[in-house]
Image 1: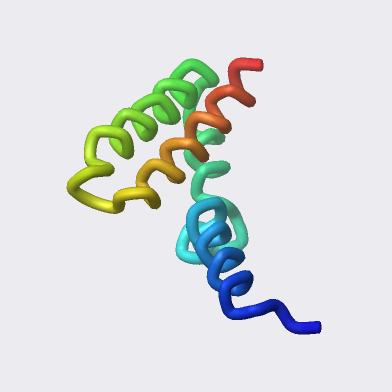
Image 2: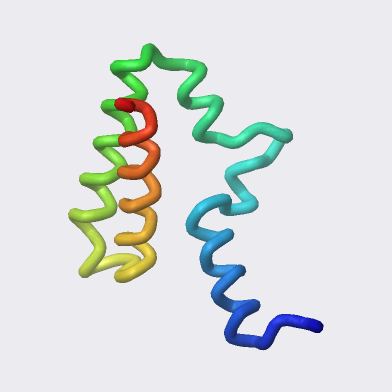
Amino acid sequence: MADSPEVMVKHYEERDIDYPPHYTAGGIECIDAIKASMSPEEFRGHLKACCIKYLWRYKLKGGIDSLKKCRWYLDRLIEEVE
């Protein structure tokens, strides 16, 4: 059975936050290329900076989507620290 329009929108929104198609050009995730170009400490700093950026501007740009992006980077930072 096909998903309802509401479920389809939710799946699209989650994919757009977690794995935006424009970040996988060339067959590699942009975040993986960034990680490969940095030391572990630098990469953790990058993730922290992304969190700050999305929290800083969520009221002016992006709203809930910016908060979800912040959460994505925070979850990734937690994984890197663990």
